[in-house]
Image 1 (cartoon, rainbow, N blue to C red):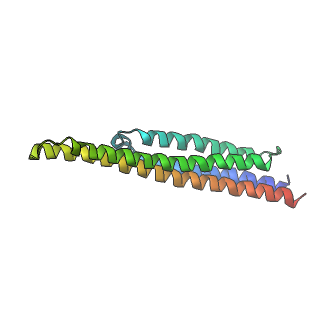
Image 2 (image 1 turned 120 degrees about the horizontal axis):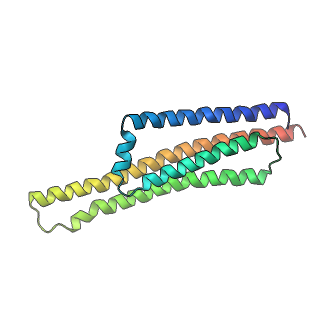
Image 3 (image 1 turned 180 degrees about the vertical axis):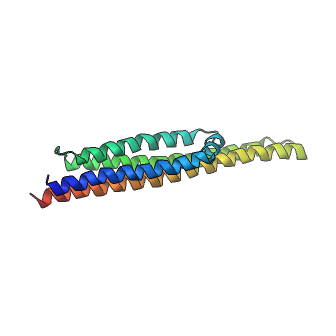
Length: 174
């Protein structure tokens, strides 16, 4: 690998760390405002926790792969494609888990309607409270899944660009 290619890949890791720092800073601001707590407490299905855990794990893998492509070791193109496919799969998975939470939330929202025996004010009021909890699950899991999907796609597109630069640098000097 040439010096130019090595510098470009090192630059990719540095840029990746900056991107991750900005993402974490945004997360800190949301946490500081209490919005993360509202989201995690409002999601009774706990799928938002799963989505966040997948994002954390894949972000760690993303950093590892950025560092790996910076090394001078030979890396097969098939390995790079496989690594990227893991990232795309994780991004799609968090989106689908968020949509699963939407369905669960709708089920939780509609369950109190079937349990109504009378239409007096107190029973309707308790049914509406239960319905709002189900709607919170639906919306919070969808929001978490969408945001995690967008961030993971951005991260792995960044990795794909760095991998492409490495491959072009390798074939351009051969």
